[in-house]
Image (cartoon, rainbow, N blue to C red; front, side, top):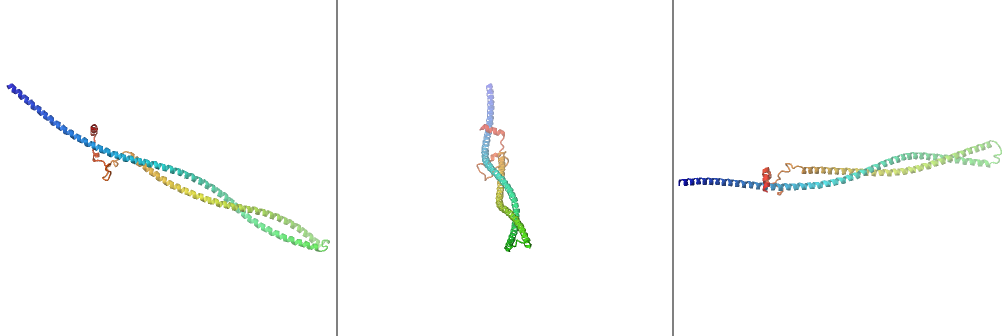
Amino acid sequence: MRAHGASNHGGDVQKHGLLAEVSALRTSLEASRADARQLLLALDEERRASAEARRYFDAQLGRLSEQLAQLGRALHESETVVGRQRAQAAALERQWEQQRRRASLLHHEMTRYRARAERGERAAAALADAEKLVQGVNERYAQLQRTMEALTMGLAAYAMVPDAFDERGPVESTMEASDERCVRLEQQVERLQASVHAAEARFRRADAERQRLAADREMQRVLLEEQQRAHASAMSALEEKYRLSKRMLSVLSLQRFERAAASISGGAPDDTAMAVPTAAADPDTTPPAAIALDITPSSSSSSSSMS
């Protein structure tokens, strides 16, 4: 009996020890379950925060992609405009070169016609001198004609006197002197006629030179008008080139600005790009408060393992 009681007492002690151990294990299990539930809640919160952050960054990436596409289209359009304006500038440059060569040719023509005009002016002065000479020759010729008529009338009067040429005396000597004078006068008349013919030839040449001078002056006037039109056209071309250069500078400035914007958009996001928008921003792109959480590598790895 005593041995049986001792065995029963030892079994009770063992039973109480097992019960205490089971209770401790149950308490530890409940604590582990509570820790597991807290971990699951933290993981769910972290997953929701990660999903919201991903949606926010996807929206930001979409907006940046759209802005980059718009900048690319604007850059392509600006390059097209710049190419077209460069072609226009090249055409205007060629036109300006043609106008410059044409103005140079007109200047040479003007110089040549100015020299011809000066020669024509000298010819006009020579023509005036020739006209004066012809007028003097005509006057002397008229005077000689009057003298010849007077001598002819005197000879006729002597011829009417009877036996005026039979006796040799003062009358005969006078007639011989008159004959010699007539010969000299005839020779002088012939010389004057030759001078008149030469003066008339010079007059005709001077008149032709005067007509050519008038034609040269008319041509000079036409060339001057053409040069003025060419100058006006060149000035308009220069003004158009200046306006085109201003447009090209504005387009190039816009292009540089767009490239800078594209480089900024394509670079690493800075603090301002990651800033939280205000309440007036789009609610779909507003970042949640969970973005500011410090997601550790262990938590991220645990979240990935949970997913």
